Length: 264
Image (cartoon, rainbow, N blue to C red; front, side, top):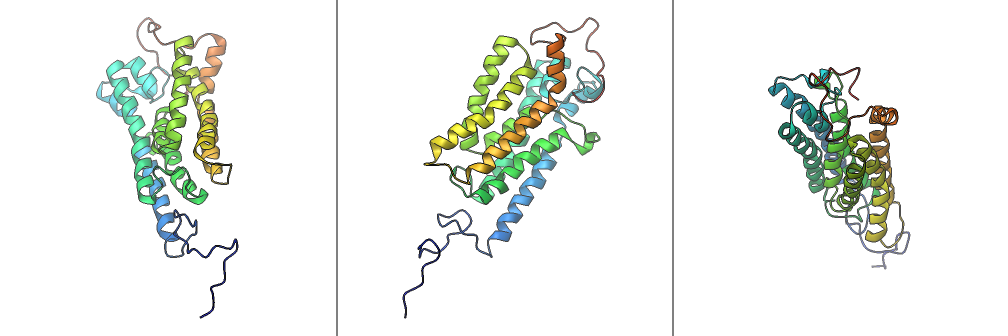
């Protein structure tokens, strides 16, 4: 028998699949991987759409959509209902981004693999994006929702370990900003902007040289950062006007005020 003809690049090694070292995409495996990616995104949107803040506030006799800032996120729940309910809301919002993302990573075999091929990363990253969209546009609330910070945090933590490390850096930015300014909105905006920067640093540490595999992580973290900034535009306007509440400020006389307009 004749010697096998090398493929382009001179390699005789067979493909090991979408996530194998060969980097190929076998016809029999690609539909399965694509199905996992789509299922993860659908599940992520469904889980992300559960309005925990609204449900927690309702259990305490408050319509959070009509109170405070009108936002269903942990900050408004804490301000209106109390520290305990606010902490619970934050934990659940993080979990609804984290758990679907981890599940998709396990199903696709990408968990803990910063060197996964770009197509694998795109399929995986669709889940945390869907979780954030579900949180911000929940069909159970007429496609209203929160700002996506806690859910986005959970989703990025689920991209272990690459984006988990980037989020740790962003958390430092959040804590320092909150300590200095006492504005949760400003801390969230600056932390979100720092995520793509920290992601670039982690990619440089984790891989030998830039590659197309970097694109999904940088693109998705940049889009999510821009989304978070856009969702906080009202906060930024109020900060500039000097009327945004700070952490530790006493509530307005007479208790929480009704929300004005949409969930800002």
